[in-house]
Image (cartoon, rainbow, N blue to C red; front, side, top):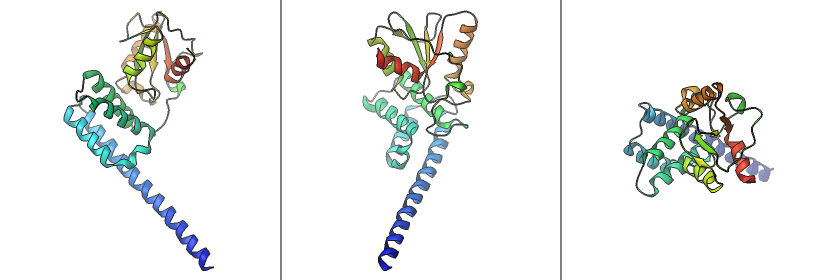
Length: 214
């Protein structure tokens, strides 16, 4: 019985440790969301804020288990790698932080196509001489990575115009996408489609599948 008692106590200690670890991670995640909300409240991200956020994430590793936070960390690591923060990188990071701080967003949740005005059924995707626009936060990588992927397949990528064939929405989105920065592009694409412009609105998952099969 003594052996069993020791085993039970050890097992309980493990459970207690796991609970305590989760409690710390939850608290740090809440703190991170609060900081991110404050940083993007004015619609801007300055270099000092990005460097501070990077240092905080390095010091609080327990939050790394969350997939969206992992993307945030990867974005910041890539942005700071060359010592220069350009405007595209700044905007990409701001969009990721917006997804992280959305009030109705359960961390790690994947965008549901039923919540977004995507084409149904999803269209067949061709890459030769077509034009893509990317908006939101992507599991594939930064927006530049997505643009590079279609360029290798013979397509073009850039801002949303009447020449755009496909608007691709990043995998991480929320039901409140209209209130988020990238929501303006989605609304514009919907308006263009309603006015007769031949533009398709698709999810990242559908786009990734087409890229993998191209």
